[in-house]
Image (cartoon, rainbow, N blue to C red; front, side, top):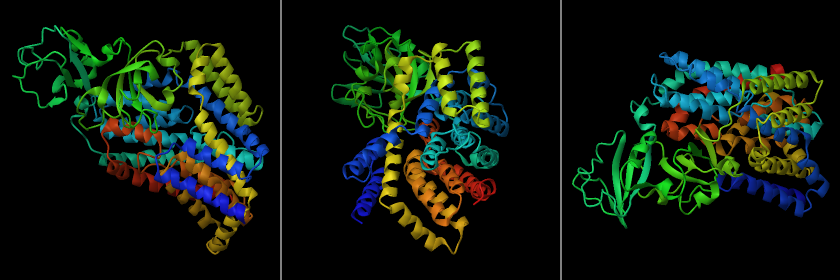
Length: 574
């Protein structure tokens, strides 16, 4: 009884920490798992076996393989042909291509690639297409085992519980149906999104800082005399002089040595500032060449979130300096180095030679527009990797070769062909996700060891027996969906699985419909920007508020949920 109270208390603390605090999920899960271990709720053999779970190792291999798949040229080649003068045709083409590639490639990479195409389109405001782009990526990920880490996590739990994970195309029939109907729903609901006429102008408007050096020809002359009002697509919004902020800047204002001039405008026109005598850009001051430019979005729970650029030690952390910064439709003010970094901020970086070798990049940024360091695959590499991936899928589907062995071969082939480097794999190794899943598997074992799963499943069974397994299935799905919107998809799947599996056992039914309800429920993040990384990626790019996600996502969430609840028992009978 004491053990049951201890593990219930640990889980209550785990869920409360994930929902009510901004503590990193990896620390919450790991600390809770260690507490269970030190309280003897699980033994050493349990911890070690969960850390080397076959499904978990397969997940790690798949994520490493995705590093190479992201470099294939098929998606960039198609991207320029997706947007047409017809809004409906553009949305369907964009959604279909996004969903297809998201079924096989990391969906954050797909959204990052296509977001650049959407933002540069002259036919439609970006704000009408970016949320549909994210939703299409989420829908596409539900079609295959490797489409989203959520599916792989659920498969890892199932393999740990039964010795048999999910097959590659177990998700396809329901996922494809939900994707097709979801895209049709988006044709209507996406029209409710704001259509901002200034998207094409504002989309590149960054805050750019330049300092007036001593001896500059600008010193002692007014803004008008220095022709700082005549810069193309750049506007002088503020001057920081010592501790004083001058805003707005009058044409008659005189320039002094040491002034920090803050411009707003198109980051691509920043070279015009370099041609002005005695004007030094923030990034050049940091000692980096401006030709090596890269646009990134700050990830949730990044190590630099909540810190200023200077306080974060940005230069030493990433071998990069911030040339410009943008935060959706919000106006930034003050010296660039003193602005606090928020999740979802767009940064234009001047990167050094060591930037791509840093191990902390993927934890802090998603690359939106990369103009340096990107490895271009050759036609031979494209065809080899694509062919090998198809062969691995066919062999795994037919049961001739285990997926883990096929992915190991594909990863080795990528390394030998030079598509990925060892330094890249070390940097992109999903250590935190591995810790979260291993910890969740261990905690699930602790729940089983102490009898909590059996007791909870029995309680739910007794109170839902009158309503039957359909009600239980709906309860598991909706509960997982609510957890996803409140925390993250991976955490929701890890928490919901033990309850779902135990409930199926209490009914004496096949666990598969309940397992699939967890997988689809954990991917159903259509109402807020926080449950899924791609939703947060597009938030600032489109200048969206919470209401925009709810407005466009509610019809989609209702249709998606209906499809899942109706079709799961048909394809996975009780």
